[in-house]
Length: 172
Image 1 (tube, rainbow, N blue to C red):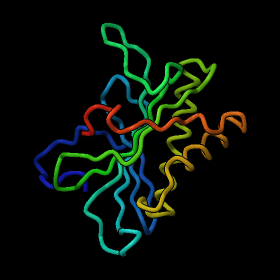
Image 2: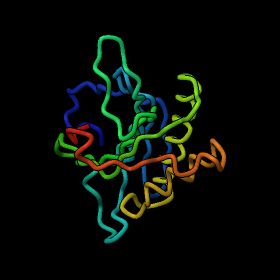
Image 3: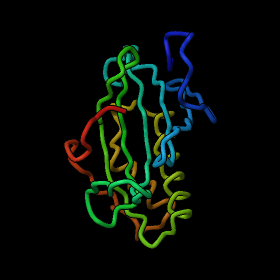
Image 4: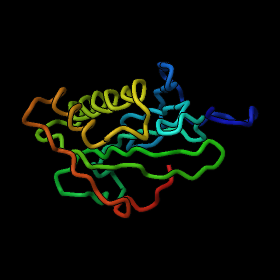
């Protein structure tokens, strides 16, 4: 459930959805200048205890290029072009918790091609929610597998995990 109050308007556009017995996956459009791809997983059960979940998973991919009139983004390393962040979003509160985050370096890619690969990698990562419980997913391994499948074996291990404090605020 995205909102409990029917009078609220949804600030996110839903572009597509996929469903499995474990999760309803929504492809969202975020109206922010850095957004490249966003998926929300409305997961149904906890993988460890089989209990209904009270949180969703939000997977956001944003570009890290400097925008006109904007300050440069803090990066885990200078060559990073995109940031992938996985949030746990409680359904009844607005605060989110970062589960995992990394900066990606799509080496030698133009902005358009880099965004295309970032979308494909993000899509493959989100699809993992359809077949596994989010609390059992090794996000680093999943990202590396997606990078290798879309960019080839030389692109493995491009993801450098950063401490949550480097993200600043953990709200979505």
